[in-house]
Length: 146
Image (cartoon, rainbow, N blue to C red; front, side, top):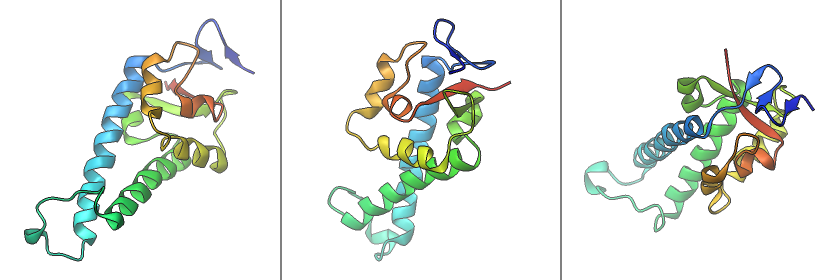
């Protein structure tokens, strides 16, 4: 393993800080929620003028659309580019603990891990050498890029 436990380094890249990870989460969360909201509205069978309020918990098709959008947002961007839009903004990317590009299966599991209740809260107690649950469960790390 190339990760230097005491320094928070993965290969030659420093791990992303808790603050940076929080910014990633806020940007990506807003994109997923607002993107999903507009996607639900755009594919809705009802005209928008009759549908000012969308309650995804009462609208099963809307919930499915949001969950699929959420999965695809993270999976496609992290698989193809190693980063989401939030990670682009902060100059970070996802790598394995060895500093390599994660496999499609790893990215899929990492993305599915985000659906675990309270998983997002795991980011509040990450340390310099420990990640969120979706990092720990998939042996991935978010690092700063040059």
